[in-house]
Length: 182
Image (cartoon, rainbow, N blue to C red; front, side):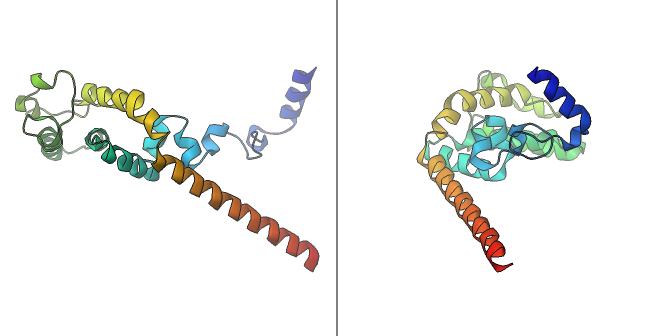
């Protein structure tokens, strides 16, 4: 009975007008999540948000493993490179910064010893993919869960919630003043 009522209601309105559980049109509620709420749903969502990356980097710096997210970000940027000469330059930079035995921010990946400068001669957008996946999984199953319990995350979450509550209180006050002033 309930399903028939819901299907009748949704037939009467086009899909673009059907509201999600939070009252906003269309899409899943995950798409409407913002900030820290969205970061908690997945590492992917955290890494899509510049503020999330900033906070995660801050956390990883304290854990002495910031090179992991820096490598992952460098690989993401590398994949977007179209120009062959630029690709060669970026590949060499990634190799020298993160993968070489003399790297300044060396990441710890399996098979790293098998990588050498010869791979840089014929670069392609996915040449670091396997290593990037290893680092992503390391962050996902290790650093990410600790980040969500960290002071950095929790303080940011509290500040975000206070800001949200403050703006909600202001909008309630504005509505109340309109009611009383009319």
